[in-house]
Length: 294
Image (cartoon, rainbow, N blue to C red; front, side, top):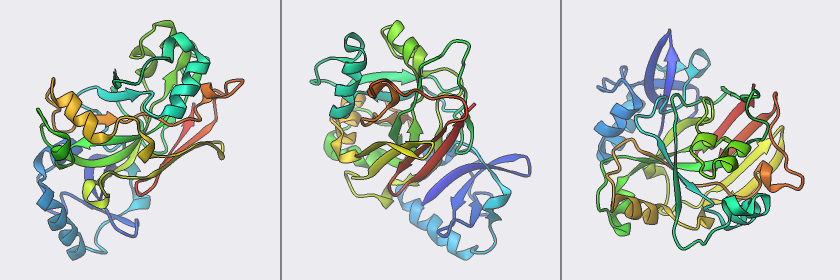
């Protein structure tokens, strides 16, 4: 089931995309008490997914045509910073170290966690802000984002999947010179417009555990990143167990699982983004997130 946030008749709403992708059934139409995606994530139980699928069948043909809405990021304004994993694919770790060894080379015994401030996530079709007054080395990173569905504390690997609500695509836009200059990654990844996300959340019941998904990115139609999510160094259960030992992962938490090789800084010479570039991020069974650099 694909859940999305959208604007229709100047009102931000949440709903379900029909299987054919031609219409959206708003939660209001389905008589569900959720006005935001985070309310839906916190309020829905796993059994509700099948109930909602059945409700969609009863209103088939009565939804809002998709060509009449404006898509938002599925969680437009996250309540907490996005939790991100750095260098979580081995090939990306190697290309990162080649770019700037002292900033990226480190042992892989433990995950690299950092956070990303997102005042407002960028929707599919929205613009990536280039910040050309302060950024010359603008980079892209396609990532699988995990959405936590219920508060998680002291969760074991074996139980971790029970806490996954669903998945979306996140493009971890990065200002490389800021990232390396400060020798920590928060500022260089948190500028306004640096978090394209979407186009929707696909509920966890649509995936096997662990999800083995093709993950790619393209710039102006040229394939740049091409990998699969089963090459993660630290997988979803490991991360949920590890983090929840020391902090409560609140329902609605977004965990972005890291990017594979093929980012701009990995080329020789590097190939950073320019104004007008079209960046496509695609993950199997989720969809495609397309944005243009301003």
